[in-house]
Amino acid sequence: MVDCIVRTVREEGILSLWRGNGSSVIRYYPSVALNFSLKDLYRNILRSNSREGAFLSGPPANFIAGSAAGCTTLIIIYPLDIAHTRLAADIGRTETRQFRGICHFLSTIHKKDGIRGIYRGLPASLQGMVVHRGLYFGGFDTIKEIMSRESESDVALWKRWVAAQAVTTAAGLLSYPLDTVRRRMMMQSGLEKPMYHSTLDCWRKIYQIEGFISFYRGAMSNIFRSTGAAAVLVLYDEIKKFMNWTGL
Image (cartoon, rainbow, N blue to C red):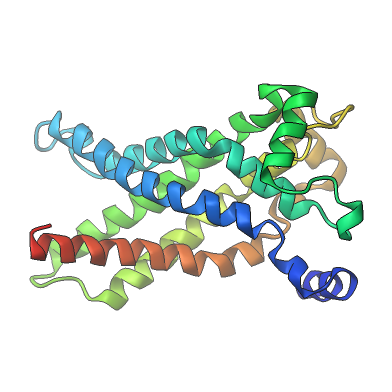
């Protein structure tokens, strides 16, 4: 990771570290808003239609709601997601880059591959989302409910942050191979001769050619990034408490 940062700055300048950040910001806000609101909506629907003690009245509702919210959000914002991935990987000096921005990327891919190219890699992305968002939201909500039952007062902020960090790290590591396949499939949009013909073919070729460890290449940087995702969980929890306290 350090070698990558040093070489990127030396060869392309320090601003290249933020390449694709514009598409990331545009994608991030609707993604977070949809994920959290849909997660609460789906969980309330599942629990309201289940009697107390039933399967969907407990932790399973948290995991199913988290997975469903993640998949719904992904389908809606997928064009921005694939644009972010491709722009971040479009390395080189300005004159040698393939795409000039989000709109140029989407229009170029649409001309070459149609709507299919814009949604290339969606099946692999949905598989990863089921695992990641299910653990991310479901794990945190379940642990928080357990801690609340065992504590007479509100669970301390630091305890919730530790739980959020543990859940976020675990979710990221368990779903990372799926994320690797997702990125590989995304990178094929617009290519005349794709290397992978399907998600299953991508899994098979990565394992046969590069080995199992390749599925986890870059996982360490992902763990460092998980701190922000953990903070978002706790911050959302605090905002909900404040809104309930003020009657908003």
